[in-house]
Image (tube, rainbow, N blue to C red; front, side, top):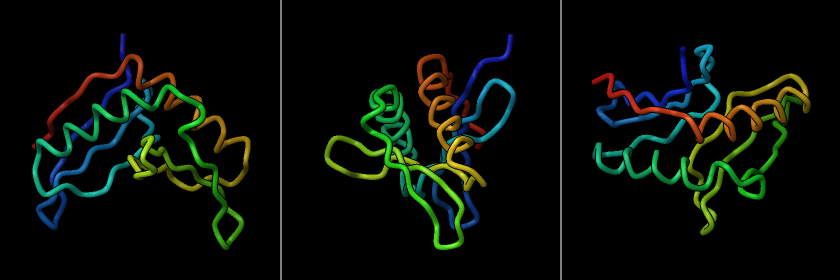
Length: 111
């Protein structure tokens, strides 16, 4: 059975990034770049720790009328953000997907 997963990868800039994918392979959360792999791992731990809480999500709208969300730490630091969605309902479904995925996700290092 396929499960949600965090994938760590190295970007063209040499930074380590992670993304959270659902069991179907859809990317639902993306991180910023980290200079050290250990910092990316700590970012994943924070997402798994705080991603279950509805209160940690900030719903936003772009200037072009699309929707996205950010996952914040208790200190207000952005742990990750979503893709853009065409409707509020799709964005909210993305939040539900992240909240479920962080409970069952595994970590894969693609480097």
